[in-house]
Length: 135
Image (cartoon, rainbow, N blue to C red; front, top):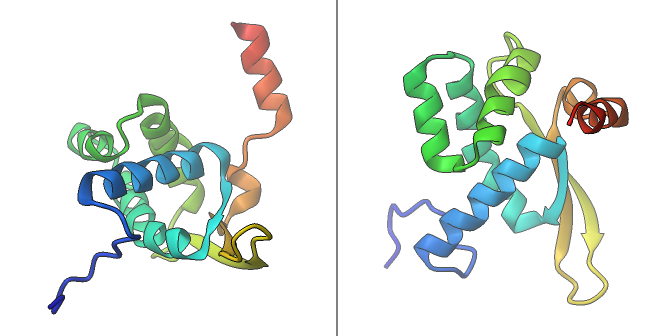
């Protein structure tokens, strides 16, 4: 029986599921919007919301906690330096899930998960070209 076990399993073992959700969270932080299945988007939402709430208070401990989940320094840096200041005083509800319909190949329900304040959080092409010229 699965009484009081709230974790969405996504038909994966624990380690695989954690890696999947961590990679999805990094992609969302980096790109601002990702296209995935509806089930994965719903599993990702509470985790990302907690990470953003954690990132609103910028200190070493919170950065280490975020890094222990994300495992990518660039994603942690962007979470604390770009995403958290962009949400400002919003008390929660940082993400939005938009349903897209069924995928052609296997009829899986697809969805976009994105930041609510998306215009501030999607990296523009100008930023990317500036970074490329700086390197």
